[in-house]
Length: 230
Image (cartoon, rainbow, N blue to C red; front, side, top):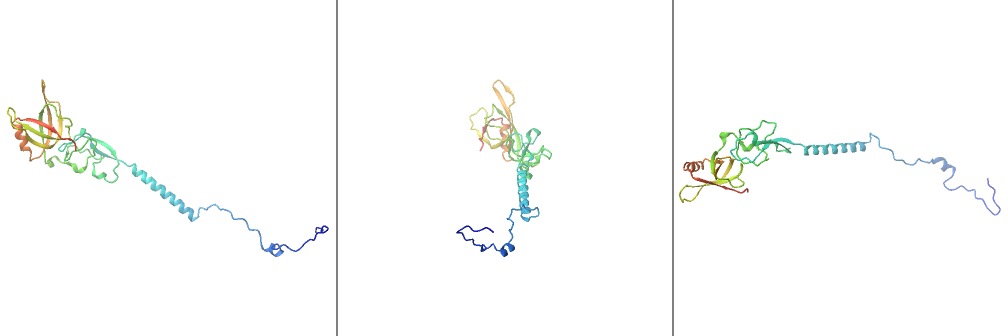
């Protein structure tokens, strides 16, 4: 025990809260620590499941966006009444996840010999609904010999008006056909000096066919008028 210095009084009373009873009953508790999560922790398992679900969903979206199919398409402008040949067709890769059945898969045989009921532009996919057997075509293809060259824009798939005028008189031209689809254009016709002819195949409806045949029988002068694309 320390001795008291002169003029100093030592107080030996116990400090509150540090008596023997308190010291015996209260042991120091360890500080709380962050425990690493266990693999069996339900919260960890739920989190992992959510991550896996998100990854699978993202993968499916990317896979669907990249999915393509091979289908038959028009390799050139095609007019109604065209009987399909190999040089009319091409194969393209397109994304058609929902309406692929409306078109002709390239895994099937090419629709050679089938006839178009509607015009198709170059590169346009060929729908099932525009194909028919030759005997199902309502119109008839008529071949004409047109003097001189045709107006710009007259090609398979375009539409033209046909006018006729009697030769050797002053009769007024007659409007023979309106908005007739062009099936074929062949500029390799006969040429004598400055005279040249161009073969033009048109799809003619049964109603207009008699008028066209009468004009051809009279050997009238034929003029083709191009219709601009609408």
